[in-house]
Image (cartoon, rainbow, N blue to C red):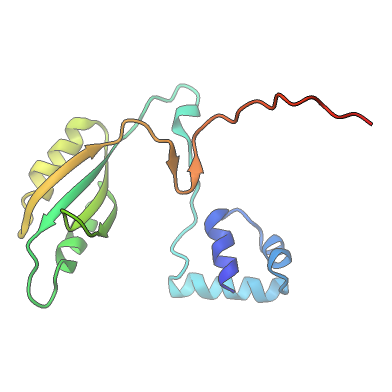
Length: 162
């Protein structure tokens, strides 16, 4: 059944009929399993990956930044309470505990660079036990959520005719 989750993660638009065919299970069984996963919170939500640069008349509507956060750990909770508090902000799209020079890596969005800067200086850096931050602004997206944002190269091969 793990295969169903992997297929949905790659393409959430697959119908239950298609999934059942792909994994060789009855449609009713696949539908029941997906419903159970949704109820249990295994499947959190479904989403589309949008290339906003291709939307007619669309300028970049958001600025994205990766923010590395250094945290002084606390006895009994480590970094979890700070990570949970950071994750509650609407600006924060993801928050990971990571290895390396910093403890947390957050993906943050704002309407412009100033909005992200204000978030870091007024909200993020004022949280107890946050000792340092490093902000990295996204300049261009080449790949997100497994999808590349390159134009396919034209096929220059000659057509084969019978």
